[in-house]
Each structure stands twice: as C-alpha cells, then as structure tokens.
Length: 234
Ligand code: PRT
Ligand code: MG
Image (cartoon, rainbow, N blue to C red; front, side):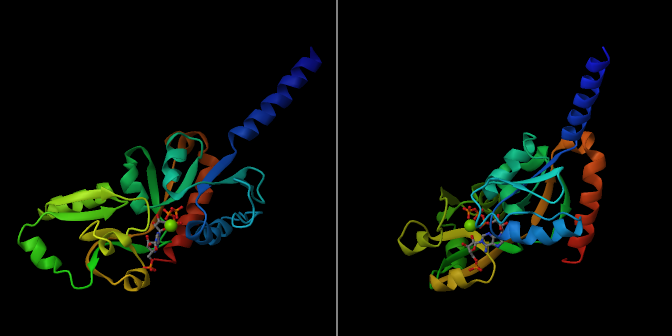
C-alpha cells in the first residue's frame, strides 16, 4: 500500500514535470540565428547548432525547454496542433497559413524584409496595370498576392512556385513576381526591379492556445523576456 502510494506519487511528480515541458518550433537559418539572442534574454541557451547537427530535437540548458527544427512554413502547423507550444514564423508564412487559430502576441522585429512586386528591367508595369492587361504573376505567396491585386482591381493569373521565383519573368513564365526582398541584391542579379511594396515583414511569436492556458506559468516569463528584448530591435 505504502509502496503503491509512493509509486503513484513519484509518477505524478514526473507527469507534472512533463506537463510543464515546453517545445519551441524554429526553422534553420535566419529565424534560428535571430531567435537565439531572444532566448538568451530569457535565460535559455540551445545546446546544439542545427546547421551542424542532424538532430531535429535540440536540448537547451533548461531541462524543461526543447527546440524542434522544422521547415519555416511548417512552424504554424506544429504550433496549431500543439506538437510545439510556441514557435517563431514570418508574417509571410502566417498570412499564407491563415493564422486565425494561432495566438500571435509579439512582433519579434527579427528576420525583417518586405514583400514586393518585381518585374523584368524594362517591363512597363505601370501601363500594363493601367491598360487593365491580365498579368501573369509567379509567387510562393498566393493568398497575399491575390488579396493585394484584388484590392487594386488588377486582373492576375497567379502561378504558384516553391522557390526561385526570380526565374519566372526571365524565361517567360510570368510578367511579375511577388517575393520577399531584403537587400535587393537577388533582384539586381537577375535584372529585376521592384515596382511595388506590398507590406513590411517581420517574424512573430506564435503560441498554442491550450498551452497558453495549461503552461501559463512557464510561458509567461519567457514571453515577457522575448517582448522586452524584441522592443529593443524595433
Ligand atoms: O528556405 P526554405 O525553403 O526552407 O524556407 P524559407 O525560405 O521560408 O525559410 P528562410 O529561412 O529562408 O526564411 C524564413 C523567413 O525569413 C521568411 O519566412 C521571412 O519571413 C524571413 N526573411 C527575411 C526572408 C528574407 N528576409 C529574404 N530575404 N526570407 C527569404 N528571403 C529571400 C527571398 O525570398 C529572396 O529569394 O532572400 C532573397 C532576397 O534577399 P535579398 O537580400 O537578395 O533581397
Ligand atoms: Mg529560404
């Protein structure tokens, strides 16, 4: 009886610990790199580098916090289904995902860029739009592009690509691209010019709704540290 009770107690103890374990979803590359200082502000250090490790689950110095490494566009999915409690994703990705079910408390002011329309150097975008021509546009961001052109009353045929959008206008697949621009050097290298800025982009913290209630005590101090550190980047 005593043994049983002890067994139950220690079990409950470990379940209670697990219930407070936090999983953070990040993508490799700029989001991982730029989230590290925010994590450090919350006292969390990731113990392995995803660029050199093949592991998809990375431990941190806090035994209750782990990082999972996923594709940038998969971050909202992991958080939505609660496989990750929180994550970091670009506004571009969140708009395509349709982020209504995700709580987005903080603009982290990291991985900043803009979403723009670009065309081949020499293509007269303004008069094509004025004449009501039907534009062919390649993009990974079909939802955002559709809304942008609809709001302007521009008729477009949108063609979804998964990468290297810059090639589209060069090989006659499209008149224009909708893509992210930061320094502009990718556009320049491919003889494309930015003709319209659609919106500013930065990465947001996204939090699973259930985790926010059930793991509130663990999450809130981290959220507060992220918010403070990201305000300094605004
Ligand atoms: O690369 P992968 O296909 O795995 O996924 P991903 O491209 O979504 O991930 P990643 O890590 O490249 O981008 C993650 C997030 O970073 C994006 O969702 C954006 O919110 C943000 N971000 C910030 C950018 C850029 N800046 C950026 N410059 N994402 C992509 N780019 C690309 C852009 O698409 C273009 O090809 O960089 C090129 C333009 O850069 P410049 O400097 O030449 O203008
Ligand atoms: Mg990329």
